Amino acid sequence: MILNQFSLSGKTAVITGCSQGIGNAIAAAMAEAGADVVGVDIVPQPCTKKKVEETGRCYLELEADLVDCTAFDDVVDKTIERFGHLDILVNNAGITRRNMAVDFSEEAWDAVIAINQKAVFFNAQKAARQFIKQKTPGKIINIASVNAFEGGVKVIAYTAAKAAVRMITMAMSNEWASLGINVNAIAPGFTVTQLTEPMRGEEDRVKEMMTRIPIGRWAKPDDMAGAAVFLASPASSYISGATIVVDGGYLGR
Image 1 (tube, one colour):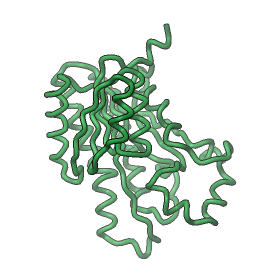
Image 2 (cartoon, one colour):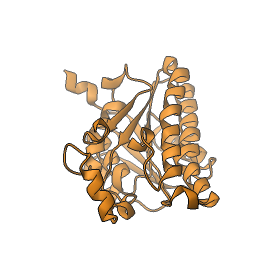
Image 3 (spheres, rainbow, N blue to C red):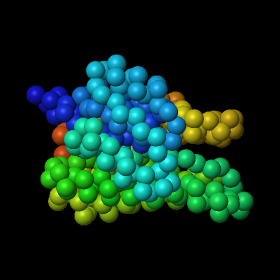
């Protein structure tokens, strides 16, 4: 049965930035597909924990500041201690800072790059090392953005980081696909999350963007869940190095 190929039964998924928004939706969806979930965020995650446990799956809540690249070592260690194996990593944690390029500060640049780019690579590196140690296949899903394909406005560091995520996804695939590690990315379009709240407050900008979304609405976090489950499942075993765009048709305009 083809639907069996979408099952995550028996798998353990680590999801960063999962207290709300896209990470929350992906965690709940992967649990519904059969995975136990390790949630990683800098803040508590009661809503995500509740959603996962309501499916009957287990949830391990870990608080970590991923600016410190060594923090993910503890995440891997605690995942193995609790579940015995790691199978899926979703690099979802992200931040942004909004300002025009001529006014963008070094501090803001460094903060965005640290979480959205540097942490993505080193988290993936550590997950890959664990997959190799286990001698098992693994799935890494990086959350990019439509800004990986276009420059955007007031988000120059975010754009730079998400373009890098798209490219390092391909580079990691080149090295790790032969080891049974599938590395892919999802590029969400404009999504109703806390991250986009400041942008959604700019009425003229929102009106302009809506003219470029053929589906006629902003995405909801749940709109990313199907792509994530697909990329985490055996159904996507021949996909590696790809960035799946989930944007309501935005880039097609």
